[in-house]
Length: 294
Image (cartoon, rainbow, N blue to C red; front, side, top):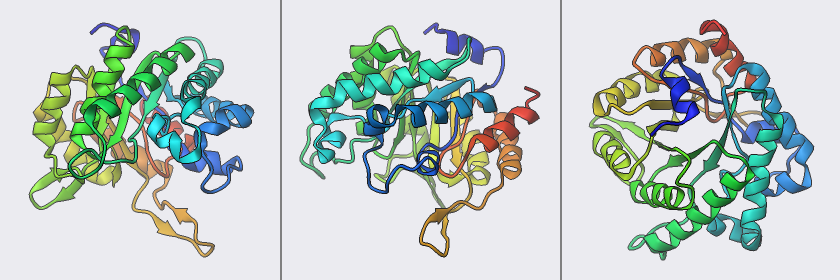
């Protein structure tokens, strides 16, 4: 599929953004509050967060819509506002971006399980993802990113829903893997190579991994990803293994410099899209951008 963000990736490494939850907390979002509701109730803070990543060097910034599937929003009594909250999420990135940068519409897990482990059908998941994707496209998304999926079947419903609702946009997909002695597997037991092949078959324009693992762990994972597919790759690790500070808050120990150094090793494995996940900040992206000569 041809799209400007994919055209850019053919010429150089594309920088994504980093963690979102910690950045929202820095701006005062209460613990347990629905992040997507802040797209309406504290739009200035959301736009400021996105602007910070663009200023740090991100080529594409993800929208504050990770939990924007209607089944996820239902837990906050917000299911009927799915279109409004997702469209606003994409519009805030669009409002903050400089010329030549991109809006990435984030689509995360529903927080529910498919049958037989859970109560939902693939069709129910797919319909919700289609609704979310349509709203993100209406808000100005240039690409849709199905991210942090721990169940291959759910990821495939998201790709199908996104492609059906927004056929003009490329759909990227990342799974989250655990490292075991037998290799890399999702929480639901999906193996890396076979899973990546299924994402490719479903029509993903770029594939990869994010969250769960540190940047050091993802160096080896990146090499396995490269061996598994010819598609453009995405890698977004966490900033080290999390701990808890004296006040009970989660902290990530890795410095921006350490993160950036590992990411250069990941880039050398043939990864086109680099970014961060939990615990990474605009400083992490800024250090990586400097090493890339931006």
